[in-house]
Length: 285
Ligand SMILES: [Mn+2]
Image: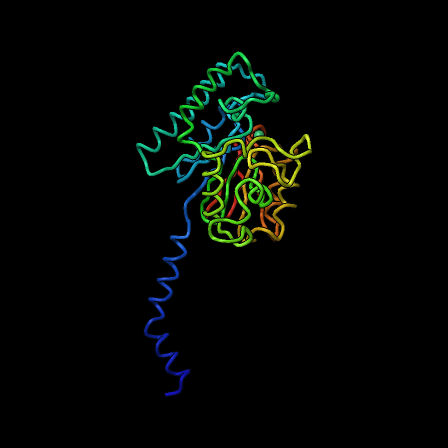
């Protein structure tokens, strides 16, 4: 029997098991359905979406719960955020579903550590109430969330921000080779140890700066910072910057070749993202 015959014989014997194992590997990768909801800004359309998306395994809110752009009253914005927290607690205690609450820049200026001038949409007469509920909820919140090859944050994670505010390298080596979980953990740990690292920095008044933080950076600066400096397999999803045409933007993201970036700040247009095993979809409410 030749070596090749022997190989074939082994494949004949074990072929079915091998393909079974491969199948198991793929199904454990992440067949979970993730629904990503863009910046809330007092809107309650998330209620209809989570009702429609009952089959979701993970629901992610990308942050910016406060500071309405559509003149939603402060008390309503407060109640809406409380409803989101209640939804998270109720869902997680009664099902396997996970509800992730990310932190945005419009939540940041209500926190006790914030001492600068607040920015657009800030409601001074609601600030104490927003602060109380945010501080209470903070242990259940985070800045970054990773599922499979997808990293979700409010504005996006730039390698240049990581190098300047977290460290020159990750705990496991250069950021260039850091896996998605290492990056996500580093961002979240930094948030709880040194929240000032997330404050607005850089020179561009709009946040279009490669060293800008994961709650402030704009898409162009993010893409420029990460090109060639982050694993190409990592896909980032973020809100924070409203795109003029979310459907067109989504179609463009699908075509991206190197790192992929998906925009989630589309609730104002009644749109949201779904993701199953790295395959993205656009939902409409
Ligand atoms: Mn924002």
